[in-house]
Length: 349
Image 1 (tube, rainbow, N blue to C red):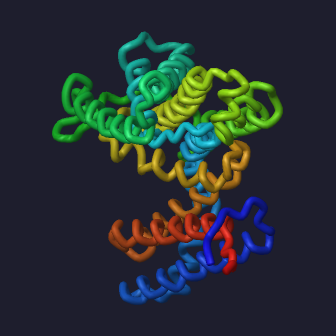
Image 2: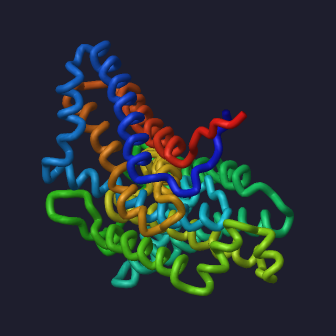
Protein backbone atom coordinates (compact mmCIF):
# COMPACT_ATOMS: atom_id res chain seq x y z
CA UNK A 1 0.00 0.00 0.00
CA UNK A 2 1.28 3.46 -0.84
CA UNK A 3 0.03 7.02 -1.36
CA UNK A 4 0.48 8.61 -4.75
CA UNK A 5 -0.72 11.73 -6.57
CA UNK A 6 -4.12 11.43 -8.23
CA UNK A 7 -3.72 13.23 -11.58
CA UNK A 8 -7.48 13.49 -12.24
CA UNK A 9 -9.56 13.25 -9.04
CA UNK A 10 -13.26 12.61 -9.59
CA UNK A 11 -15.64 15.43 -8.57
CA UNK A 12 -17.42 13.10 -6.14
CA UNK A 13 -14.11 12.31 -4.45
CA UNK A 14 -13.29 16.02 -4.07
CA UNK A 15 -16.71 16.80 -2.61
CA UNK A 16 -16.46 13.81 -0.26
CA UNK A 17 -13.00 14.85 0.98
CA UNK A 18 -14.16 18.38 1.75
CA UNK A 19 -17.33 17.14 3.46
CA UNK A 20 -15.34 14.74 5.64
CA UNK A 21 -12.67 17.20 6.76
CA UNK A 22 -15.04 20.11 7.31
CA UNK A 23 -17.30 17.77 9.30
CA UNK A 24 -14.39 16.72 11.51
CA UNK A 25 -13.47 20.37 12.04
CA UNK A 26 -17.05 21.20 13.04
CA UNK A 27 -17.07 18.37 15.59
CA UNK A 28 -13.80 19.64 17.10
CA UNK A 29 -15.14 23.20 17.15
CA UNK A 30 -18.35 22.01 18.80
CA UNK A 31 -16.31 20.55 21.66
CA UNK A 32 -14.37 23.81 21.94
CA UNK A 33 -17.53 25.93 22.05
CA UNK A 34 -19.13 23.58 24.58
CA UNK A 35 -16.04 23.89 26.82
CA UNK A 36 -16.38 27.68 26.59
CA UNK A 37 -20.05 27.47 27.60
CA UNK A 38 -21.59 28.21 24.21
CA UNK A 39 -24.05 25.92 22.44
CA UNK A 40 -22.32 24.62 19.29
CA UNK A 41 -25.34 25.10 17.03
CA UNK A 42 -25.72 28.69 18.18
CA UNK A 43 -22.03 29.33 17.54
CA UNK A 44 -22.34 27.89 14.03
CA UNK A 45 -25.36 30.08 13.39
CA UNK A 46 -23.47 33.21 14.43
CA UNK A 47 -20.44 32.17 12.40
CA UNK A 48 -22.52 31.85 9.22
CA UNK A 49 -24.67 34.89 9.99
CA UNK A 50 -22.24 37.04 8.02
CA UNK A 51 -23.70 35.53 4.84
CA UNK A 52 -27.23 36.71 5.61
CA UNK A 53 -26.51 40.25 6.74
CA UNK A 54 -25.51 43.18 4.49
CA UNK A 55 -22.92 44.39 7.00
CA UNK A 56 -21.61 40.85 7.35
CA UNK A 57 -21.25 40.51 3.59
CA UNK A 58 -19.45 43.84 3.56
CA UNK A 59 -16.99 42.48 6.10
CA UNK A 60 -16.47 39.39 3.97
CA UNK A 61 -15.75 41.61 0.97
CA UNK A 62 -13.38 43.80 2.99
CA UNK A 63 -11.37 40.76 4.05
CA UNK A 64 -11.46 39.31 0.54
CA UNK A 65 -9.95 42.39 -1.14
CA UNK A 66 -6.30 41.88 -0.03
CA UNK A 67 -6.69 38.10 -0.33
CA UNK A 68 -7.87 38.53 -3.92
CA UNK A 69 -4.95 40.74 -4.94
CA UNK A 70 -2.26 38.76 -3.15
CA UNK A 71 -3.79 35.36 -3.92
CA UNK A 72 -3.93 35.92 -7.68
CA UNK A 73 -0.25 36.88 -7.71
CA UNK A 74 0.73 33.91 -5.55
CA UNK A 75 -1.34 31.50 -7.67
CA UNK A 76 0.67 32.63 -10.69
CA UNK A 77 3.97 32.42 -8.81
CA UNK A 78 3.28 28.93 -7.45
CA UNK A 79 2.26 27.71 -10.91
CA UNK A 80 5.59 28.88 -12.29
CA UNK A 81 7.55 27.31 -9.43
CA UNK A 82 8.42 30.54 -7.59
CA UNK A 83 7.35 29.91 -3.99
CA UNK A 84 6.82 33.42 -2.68
CA UNK A 85 6.24 33.25 1.09
CA UNK A 86 6.92 36.95 1.61
CA UNK A 87 3.62 38.52 0.57
CA UNK A 88 3.12 39.84 4.10
CA UNK A 89 6.31 41.87 3.85
CA UNK A 90 5.49 42.97 0.30
CA UNK A 91 2.09 44.20 1.52
CA UNK A 92 3.82 46.24 4.23
CA UNK A 93 6.26 47.72 1.72
CA UNK A 94 3.28 48.71 -0.43
CA UNK A 95 1.76 50.46 2.58
CA UNK A 96 5.06 52.29 3.17
CA UNK A 97 5.18 53.48 -0.43
CA UNK A 98 1.56 54.68 -0.27
CA UNK A 99 2.22 56.52 2.98
CA UNK A 100 5.21 58.33 1.54
CA UNK A 101 3.19 59.48 -1.46
CA UNK A 102 0.29 60.55 0.77
CA UNK A 103 2.24 62.46 3.41
CA UNK A 104 5.38 63.76 1.74
CA UNK A 105 4.31 64.62 -1.82
CA UNK A 106 2.04 67.55 -2.75
CA UNK A 107 -1.62 66.41 -2.65
CA UNK A 108 -3.81 66.54 -5.73
CA UNK A 109 -5.73 64.35 -8.19
CA UNK A 110 -2.47 62.52 -8.89
CA UNK A 111 -2.05 61.39 -5.26
CA UNK A 112 -3.95 58.09 -5.40
CA UNK A 113 -2.36 56.97 -8.70
CA UNK A 114 1.07 57.81 -7.25
CA UNK A 115 0.26 55.82 -4.11
CA UNK A 116 -0.65 52.74 -6.14
CA UNK A 117 2.34 53.21 -8.43
CA UNK A 118 4.87 53.60 -5.63
CA UNK A 119 3.31 50.94 -3.39
CA UNK A 120 3.13 48.41 -6.21
CA UNK A 121 6.69 49.20 -7.27
CA UNK A 122 8.10 48.69 -3.78
CA UNK A 123 6.25 45.40 -3.35
CA UNK A 124 7.43 44.24 -6.76
CA UNK A 125 11.06 45.16 -6.14
CA UNK A 126 10.96 43.43 -2.74
CA UNK A 127 9.82 40.15 -4.33
CA UNK A 128 11.96 40.72 -7.42
CA UNK A 129 15.05 40.77 -5.22
CA UNK A 130 14.29 37.23 -4.04
CA UNK A 131 13.68 36.11 -7.64
CA UNK A 132 16.99 37.64 -8.74
CA UNK A 133 18.87 35.93 -5.89
CA UNK A 134 17.40 32.59 -6.92
CA UNK A 135 18.19 33.11 -10.61
CA UNK A 136 21.70 34.46 -10.01
CA UNK A 137 22.92 32.45 -7.02
CA UNK A 138 20.39 29.62 -6.62
CA UNK A 139 19.20 31.00 -3.27
CA UNK A 140 15.97 29.50 -1.94
CA UNK A 141 13.18 32.03 -2.47
CA UNK A 142 11.26 30.41 0.39
CA UNK A 143 13.92 31.37 2.93
CA UNK A 144 14.67 34.74 1.35
CA UNK A 145 11.05 35.90 1.16
CA UNK A 146 10.35 34.57 4.65
CA UNK A 147 13.23 36.58 6.11
CA UNK A 148 12.14 39.63 4.12
CA UNK A 149 8.88 39.61 6.09
CA UNK A 150 10.81 40.41 9.27
CA UNK A 151 12.80 43.17 7.59
CA UNK A 152 9.62 44.81 6.32
CA UNK A 153 7.94 44.40 9.72
CA UNK A 154 10.69 46.19 11.61
CA UNK A 155 11.02 48.86 8.92
CA UNK A 156 7.37 49.80 9.49
CA UNK A 157 7.85 49.75 13.28
CA UNK A 158 10.88 52.04 12.92
CA UNK A 159 9.00 54.49 10.70
CA UNK A 160 5.85 54.80 12.85
CA UNK A 161 7.88 54.97 16.06
CA UNK A 162 10.52 57.34 14.67
CA UNK A 163 10.71 59.68 11.69
CA UNK A 164 7.11 59.24 10.52
CA UNK A 165 5.42 59.24 13.93
CA UNK A 166 2.32 61.44 13.96
CA UNK A 167 2.43 64.76 15.75
CA UNK A 168 -0.78 63.88 17.64
CA UNK A 169 -0.02 60.18 18.13
CA UNK A 170 1.11 60.64 21.75
CA UNK A 171 1.90 57.14 23.05
CA UNK A 172 0.53 55.30 20.02
CA UNK A 173 2.45 54.25 16.94
CA UNK A 174 0.99 55.69 13.77
CA UNK A 175 1.57 58.51 11.33
CA UNK A 176 -0.43 61.68 10.72
CA UNK A 177 -3.77 61.08 8.94
CA UNK A 178 -3.74 61.04 5.15
CA UNK A 179 -5.18 64.07 3.35
CA UNK A 180 -8.56 63.67 1.69
CA UNK A 181 -6.93 63.29 -1.73
CA UNK A 182 -5.15 60.15 -0.49
CA UNK A 183 -8.28 58.29 0.62
CA UNK A 184 -10.02 55.66 -1.49
CA UNK A 185 -13.82 55.85 -1.89
CA UNK A 186 -15.81 53.14 -0.12
CA UNK A 187 -19.28 51.70 -0.52
CA UNK A 188 -21.67 53.75 1.70
CA UNK A 189 -21.80 52.50 5.27
CA UNK A 190 -18.98 50.00 4.82
CA UNK A 191 -15.19 49.78 4.68
CA UNK A 192 -15.23 48.16 1.23
CA UNK A 193 -12.89 50.26 -0.90
CA UNK A 194 -14.41 49.30 -4.22
CA UNK A 195 -11.62 50.53 -6.55
CA UNK A 196 -9.22 48.03 -4.98
CA UNK A 197 -11.85 45.28 -5.13
CA UNK A 198 -12.36 45.98 -8.83
CA UNK A 199 -8.59 46.04 -9.36
CA UNK A 200 -8.23 42.64 -7.69
CA UNK A 201 -10.96 41.04 -9.80
CA UNK A 202 -9.49 42.43 -13.01
CA UNK A 203 -5.97 41.32 -12.03
CA UNK A 204 -7.15 37.76 -11.34
CA UNK A 205 -8.94 37.49 -14.69
CA UNK A 206 -6.11 39.08 -16.69
CA UNK A 207 -3.49 36.81 -15.13
CA UNK A 208 -5.66 33.76 -15.77
CA UNK A 209 -6.07 34.63 -19.45
CA UNK A 210 -2.39 35.51 -19.75
CA UNK A 211 -1.31 32.22 -18.16
CA UNK A 212 -3.56 29.92 -20.17
CA UNK A 213 -4.19 31.76 -23.43
CA UNK A 214 -0.88 33.38 -24.49
CA UNK A 215 2.52 32.10 -25.66
CA UNK A 216 4.21 33.86 -22.73
CA UNK A 217 1.91 32.09 -20.31
CA UNK A 218 2.77 28.79 -21.98
CA UNK A 219 6.46 29.45 -21.25
CA UNK A 220 5.65 30.04 -17.59
CA UNK A 221 3.62 26.83 -17.38
CA UNK A 222 6.40 24.81 -18.99
CA UNK A 223 8.90 26.22 -16.51
CA UNK A 224 6.65 25.38 -13.56
CA UNK A 225 5.70 21.89 -14.67
CA UNK A 226 8.98 20.71 -16.18
CA UNK A 227 12.09 22.89 -15.67
CA UNK A 228 14.20 20.41 -17.66
CA UNK A 229 11.88 20.75 -20.67
CA UNK A 230 12.11 24.54 -20.31
CA UNK A 231 15.90 24.25 -20.45
CA UNK A 232 15.73 22.09 -23.58
CA UNK A 233 13.44 24.64 -25.21
CA UNK A 234 15.98 27.37 -24.50
CA UNK A 235 13.72 29.35 -22.16
CA UNK A 236 15.43 31.93 -19.96
CA UNK A 237 14.34 30.68 -16.54
CA UNK A 238 15.94 33.58 -14.69
CA UNK A 239 14.10 36.18 -16.75
CA UNK A 240 10.78 34.36 -16.37
CA UNK A 241 11.21 34.02 -12.59
CA UNK A 242 12.13 37.68 -12.25
CA UNK A 243 8.97 38.71 -14.09
CA UNK A 244 6.69 36.54 -12.01
CA UNK A 245 8.38 37.76 -8.83
CA UNK A 246 7.81 41.39 -9.83
CA UNK A 247 4.15 40.72 -10.65
CA UNK A 248 3.31 38.78 -7.48
CA UNK A 249 5.13 41.30 -5.29
CA UNK A 250 3.48 44.25 -7.00
CA UNK A 251 0.01 42.81 -6.41
CA UNK A 252 0.81 42.30 -2.72
CA UNK A 253 2.07 45.87 -2.59
CA UNK A 254 -1.21 47.10 -4.11
CA UNK A 255 -3.06 45.23 -1.35
CA UNK A 256 -1.04 47.23 1.18
CA UNK A 257 -1.99 50.47 -0.57
CA UNK A 258 -5.65 49.51 -0.35
CA UNK A 259 -5.45 48.81 3.39
CA UNK A 260 -3.94 52.18 4.34
CA UNK A 261 -5.73 54.29 1.73
CA UNK A 262 -9.13 52.63 2.01
CA UNK A 263 -9.45 51.69 5.69
CA UNK A 264 -6.89 53.14 8.11
CA UNK A 265 -5.98 56.42 6.36
CA UNK A 266 -2.61 56.30 8.09
CA UNK A 267 0.32 53.92 8.52
CA UNK A 268 0.11 51.95 11.77
CA UNK A 269 1.94 49.08 13.44
CA UNK A 270 2.32 46.09 11.08
CA UNK A 271 -0.17 43.91 12.97
CA UNK A 272 -2.83 46.57 12.47
CA UNK A 273 -2.09 47.18 8.81
CA UNK A 274 -2.39 43.49 7.92
CA UNK A 275 -4.24 40.77 9.82
CA UNK A 276 -1.97 38.10 8.40
CA UNK A 277 -3.35 38.51 4.89
CA UNK A 278 -0.02 37.66 3.29
CA UNK A 279 0.01 34.24 4.94
CA UNK A 280 -3.70 33.50 4.55
CA UNK A 281 -3.38 34.31 0.84
CA UNK A 282 -0.97 31.38 0.50
CA UNK A 283 -3.90 29.08 1.25
CA UNK A 284 -6.12 31.12 -1.10
CA UNK A 285 -3.62 30.52 -3.91
CA UNK A 286 -3.12 26.86 -3.03
CA UNK A 287 -6.85 26.16 -3.09
CA UNK A 288 -7.02 27.88 -6.49
CA UNK A 289 -4.84 25.04 -7.85
CA UNK A 290 -2.54 27.32 -9.82
CA UNK A 291 -5.32 29.21 -11.59
CA UNK A 292 -5.34 32.95 -10.77
CA UNK A 293 -8.96 33.25 -11.93
CA UNK A 294 -10.12 30.68 -9.38
CA UNK A 295 -9.01 33.06 -6.63
CA UNK A 296 -12.30 34.85 -7.32
CA UNK A 297 -13.89 31.88 -5.51
CA UNK A 298 -11.29 31.00 -2.88
CA UNK A 299 -10.65 34.55 -1.63
CA UNK A 300 -14.30 35.13 -0.59
CA UNK A 301 -14.33 31.66 0.99
CA UNK A 302 -11.44 32.62 3.26
CA UNK A 303 -13.08 36.00 3.78
CA UNK A 304 -16.09 34.19 5.26
CA UNK A 305 -13.81 32.30 7.66
CA UNK A 306 -12.14 35.51 8.87
CA UNK A 307 -15.35 37.56 9.10
CA UNK A 308 -17.18 34.68 10.82
CA UNK A 309 -14.46 34.52 13.44
CA UNK A 310 -14.95 38.20 14.16
CA UNK A 311 -18.70 37.63 14.53
CA UNK A 312 -18.06 34.97 17.18
CA UNK A 313 -15.79 37.32 19.09
CA UNK A 314 -18.40 40.08 19.14
CA UNK A 315 -21.43 37.86 19.89
CA UNK A 316 -19.97 35.80 22.73
CA UNK A 317 -17.12 38.03 23.96
CA UNK A 318 -14.74 35.23 23.09
CA UNK A 319 -11.03 35.94 23.52
CA UNK A 320 -9.24 36.34 20.24
CA UNK A 321 -7.31 33.11 20.89
CA UNK A 322 -10.55 31.10 20.70
CA UNK A 323 -11.40 32.87 17.46
CA UNK A 324 -7.91 32.12 16.12
CA UNK A 325 -8.39 28.43 16.96
CA UNK A 326 -11.75 28.49 15.17
CA UNK A 327 -10.27 30.02 12.02
CA UNK A 328 -7.22 27.78 12.26
CA UNK A 329 -9.23 24.56 12.47
CA UNK A 330 -11.37 25.50 9.49
CA UNK A 331 -8.32 26.46 7.46
CA UNK A 332 -6.61 23.22 8.48
CA UNK A 333 -9.70 21.30 7.34
CA UNK A 334 -9.50 22.98 3.93
CA UNK A 335 -5.81 22.09 3.65
CA UNK A 336 -6.47 18.47 4.65
CA UNK A 337 -9.38 18.16 2.22
CA UNK A 338 -7.35 19.58 -0.64
CA UNK A 339 -4.43 17.24 0.08
CA UNK A 340 -6.70 14.21 0.39
CA UNK A 341 -8.50 14.99 -2.86
CA UNK A 342 -5.20 15.24 -4.74
CA UNK A 343 -3.90 11.85 -3.56
CA UNK A 344 -5.05 8.24 -3.60
CA UNK A 345 -4.22 4.97 -1.91
CA UNK A 346 -2.82 2.27 -4.18
CA UNK A 347 -3.01 -1.34 -3.00
CA UNK A 348 -0.29 -3.45 -4.55
CA UNK A 349 1.76 -6.39 -3.43
